[in-house]
Image (cartoon, rainbow, N blue to C red; front, side, top):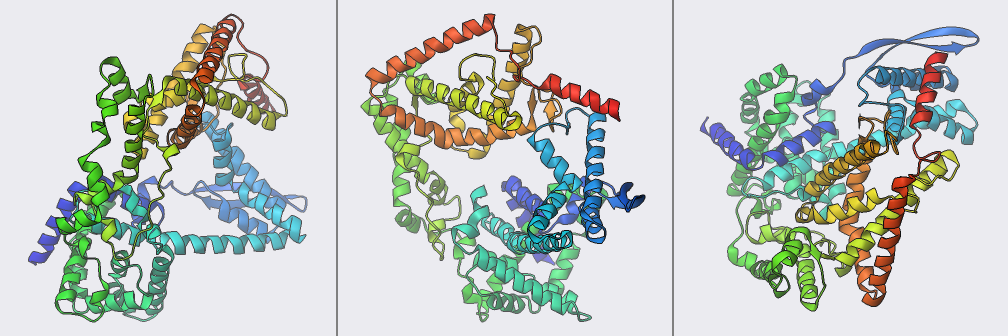
Length: 617
């Protein structure tokens, strides 16, 4: 039929415009096991048989377990059938085996040290279950009761995750695809659409009732096939109007699909070739193309059935009350609803006198690196305009008609929390503010590492290569984020990735240069950490840098800058000069007499322990 070709043509057009976010939506759904789960077959390890030993009443017992890198079910079964000690021994063997395999394999995937390695080991070995059971048993006085409570809590947790995340995420995916039908921009913020309208729980209830109804119909001979298509449109309907009751959404889907079930079945069959290609590539092609293409096509199909329902005045069709998913709003209406946004668009902060008056090297520093040598009244006015832009930036695409107009949605979306003026992350920083940010973060880094070592080993150690209470790599990273990555602040996702790359490069090169300059002395070594590179950087540290970098750029640095502005220049400047002088003196002294005391790096101790372990084995 011609309509199928038309639906697919329109789907390809939408997919071309929004490929990244459409593919990401389907991939997230697959990872959550909400749908498209078969697309991840290529990433699943093959089952293998493993013989584990544990002691029972003085004799050795063998347990044959088919596991896929995880022994949770086996461990829980052993604890329920035998005792907690048997499960603990089984978990220990799994963890030891994983560590040994990591030691023999790529050093990048070390699993002997670090918080992330510990988490990976505990999760993969199932030791978390043993710990939880022991904790519950300490209250109940019975290992059996502990296992039972753990099973019940696990079942409840799995149900809540399924009901509140897995079962409702198809609605989120459909909303993203619906907004991508006619608009040029769909942002990642639309993934929290249900939260913004405070209808996540209601959408979850709709999908739960739909699932229960369909499950009951599956008990009949033909119900599984017929009702699959009767309820086919429920997630689309909930995505358009999540304020419906479950019965309204299900009833409306049945009415809209009446006379179209076979048509929908044939439409699905038309993608069979793509599905076969996906299976031949172990699901890779499904992730890259088939899933988003098919979902985009059926989103168009829903739009077609919705138009027919509206045309025939189908009972309940009036509940589908979001016309701006299918046609763009009148420009005059957008002007009325987005007057404040349009005013900012017509008079952007870049045109403010404060910045245009800066020329030469001062203008280059301000515009490209966000640095102000002097903060005058003109610059303060510019900062205020920037703060207004930050609050309205996300609405500019709506006002231009390029993105879905959230202000016209029938259910008022919750207003985005406005950042107070003191947290305007698009601000420019004076030289004195950058100095204070450098020392604040350097001291924080020193306190953090000293505190972590104190908690872990019970001893005070002056961490870092310098003798003073600062680790300059933290402050340097913060200043570079604010200056080198100045132009990325408007995009948190890019800021996050760029921060990881920048800080990873900084840490790697710092480690490399310091080792060369000191004749091979290491002040840190991540050997044994999960996903490390030559022991200089690791995934655990980079993740901390990425998350911490966002906190610095969007909250901590603006707060420090605001506090700095409140200090008189007659006090601030001498204090900064004193800090810089002391720091330079420490750096010069440490170049001659570096801090290489006990505990600065624990690599030698770790290697020694590893060697002793291997010998004992």
